[in-house]
Amino acid sequence: MSDNPELTAAEVFLARLAEHGVDYVFGNAGTDFPSIIEAFSRASESGIELPTPIAVPHENLAIAMAHGYYQATGRPQAVIVHVNVGTANTICGMLNASRDNIPILLFAGRTAITEDGQFGSRSVFIHWGQEMFDQAAMVREAVKWDYELRTPEQASDVVDRAITIAMSEPRGPIYVTLPREVLAKSAPPPKLGMDAVSIPHRAGPDPQAIKTLSQMIVDANNPVLITGAYGRDVDDVQILADFAEKHAIPVVPYRPRYVALPTSHPMHVGFETGVRVRDADLIIVMDTDVPWMPKLHKISDNARVVHIGADPLFSTYVMRSFPSHLAITGNSALVLTALDEKLATIDMPAVKIEGRQRETQSVRAQAAEARQQTLEAAAARPQSTMPWVAHCINDAKKSDDIIVTEVVFPLNMIDFEEPGCHFGMSPAGGLGWGLGESIGLKMANPDRRVIAVIGDGAYMFGNPSPAHFICEAMELPVLTIILNNGMWGAVRRSTLSMYPDGAAAKSNEAPLTHLKPSPRFEHIVQASGGYSERVETAEELPAAIARALKVVDTEKRQVVLNVLCEYSDGAAIQDANR
Image 1 (spheres, rainbow, N blue to C red):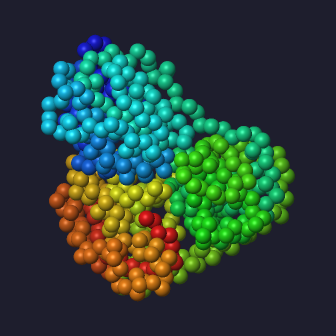
Image 2 (image 1 turned 180 degrees about the vertical axis):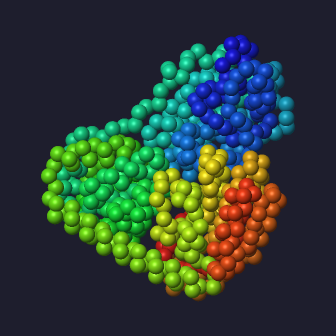
Image 3 (image 1 turned 90 degrees about the vertical axis):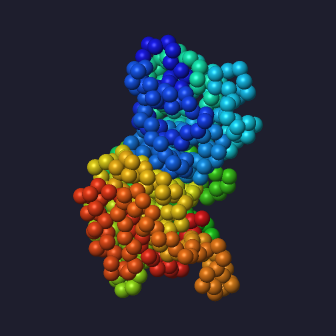
């Protein structure tokens, strides 16, 4: 930080972000940010280190990029948007971040407060119409904390407060408004170094709760551990792998957002919970908001249910009433470590371990047979199906390729052996996330391939023109595979689940479900120098993926494959996602 006393609040604000390890400011600015733009422009003159500014042509894309970059690095990034209208465009992405516990730092301008008399007072027609009584109210339910910068002296403190709250467990986004006049005023440099600002450590579990759960594990004949968001920290994956194998506890990553357990792990029993919870006498729910569907899946009357996580009650959810015989608050990796240590002091009959192992081996063998049957059926279809696309991706990918799925995808057809290789969408289900997520991941992993798998509807939600513009501008060769069935498949499945014999079920084109005529999606990326193909048959897909990856690898260009897919009402993909 320079000793220059004439730094503006905007410069101090941006410099403090950099001191906290914020690499990028993903910006979609407006008339409220002249001081921010000036600060970036004179950074070399002022001698201060600032984050790198990235101009992103749509706010929802900027949020998704910050989302992905954090997931790859563990460092929260900043997004700057234009007053209320820019904030409005972030809401879908902020809902995704909130439910996925992603600490995005969202800063929005606030239209000039004064009509005259100050440097930065209103000077543009829209400054009157864009003022709101409570701008933060738009996002308040989706953030952990919101505030408005009130004086230039607060510029550093506001950043400290924002980041420490966002990064405390359970993590989540924050929102701060920045009035135009305040940003332009002179501000003192930060008085304290980073040593005086600490993010709370991960919470450890209560020893009595660990003792209770350890005995429940010993007593159980048929336990199961269900997780959805475990594995964000790649170092945690080995902890679960060792724990599950040592104590013979089957694991179901249900609607996973990360790789919680390698696919080949002997205790990995697939991605669906229905049969597992029906037969289990102990259900351990870890980092999972919805462990099963009560309407579809019934648990045993004798089953004991335990919830583990930073917020095991998911207290920000309006209604969530799954049984809970024991709830343990704490970081899940720390809970597993404590359980392992406690179980080492308790004798567990070897026959019980062996019985669980045999049962799990049988389940895995059945799953392998079902996977082969699914593949054979998919290979015989004239048009690509989701299982066929998954299989072809699996055949073509490298072990460390990163797969982003913004669709309910048959993950059982893909092998994920390394942590940090899969990212699934937030439980909020806000479409338009996948393109930005894949860009953020690629920014953080320039030497790894990133493959985004999204539906045709999600592709349109994802602001494809801005996304492909960013990929060209930043030289980010991402492969996007569009699963194009010409409809809102999730909406149709949801309708059929409620009205299986209704009029919509008999219609070939029920209202509000079809997206026809389907756009020529393969043309959009060409405007930004990308390569694309339209893949019309299942037979063409393997070679198309191979060509696409060759372009990514050798030409360093982004690629879009518009894969025409067969729609199925079948049980392979059951849940509606909207």
